[in-house]
Image (tube, rainbow, N blue to C red; front, side):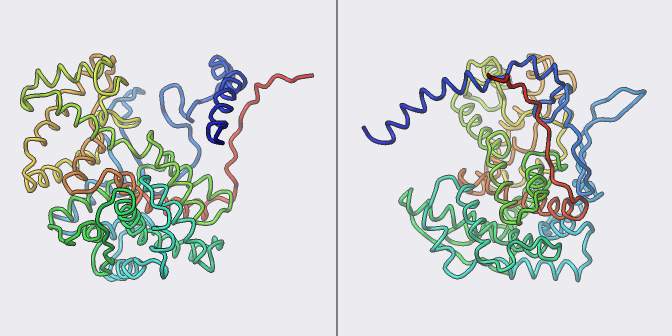
Length: 444
């Protein structure tokens, strides 16, 4: 018998033992007042820290009552919608908003130029790193590939363990610059070795923005339109940071509090983000939309769309989970501010790509789904589409392969993680150590 077969046989038996000994009665969580998932009975996150980096609101208080409201998201005191609007129709603002999140204030023209120039100069990898590290063990899981590369980069940093603020800022800026390369090159290696397709490795251009470099490096002809760059740039800005209470940012804080180095900290955040409950939501939206297209004959027939969405909610269609992916959010009720901003840019890209028919289907689902969910789930506080409802559609129109969807999220969120790491280092000097109540029975 092969070793793998032996192990499968053993662990199959061991699972039954684990289920017997590791199960805890649900009543005990109530008895000891444990907030599962660090959330209270209303679904609100348990307060575990303070931050000056970003803020989310989704309700107002009137006469002591919590009233659902359109969601708002702030970066360093500025509403994200206003920041996006201030960039106008053509300016690519990833680097500018990265400066804001990382350093806490908007740069002037000279400061922005210096910051962008340094990011461009950092957009490189150590000699032979692509060949010796990224191409050595290509994987369909680009997040795993990136995480391995991040940890390996520590070996090339003479001051890897130095947690002084200047050094951490230097490491953060380098990782922000390097993430697009780790993602694209990781995919190119997988595409060549595993999918048996053509290999091409384009060097980044230090004069181009992060969004432009992403598109240029991904495409054989290195060409992209201004609309494509603007839409991707906007997507990156909207995914940079989200209130500090999300799983991967909390992971960043926890590992930082232990005194660990930047590379280990960001690798841990990557491991959190790759979880399908966190960073992979847009892939589920794309799978759902493909299923809907296969079962809907007329994208403008709202009754036909509503009937099939009802089947999904009743667990009679798609994956049987009863979920319309991309609808609803743990915090937002009436609307997700990121989706409100993003939708305009999605419409422009759909027009350029002649995808108006698909855009109409998305818009019809956006109109119909919240009403069905509210009715069937008795949700009266409001259900609205979140940014993941459209982000996968955008990436598809841009020709970005699904293997890179969560990696694109990471390319944006590394900025927020870095800002929270710096804030944790500056503001606290205490390791995060949560309490767990033991319900173990003593044996004699």
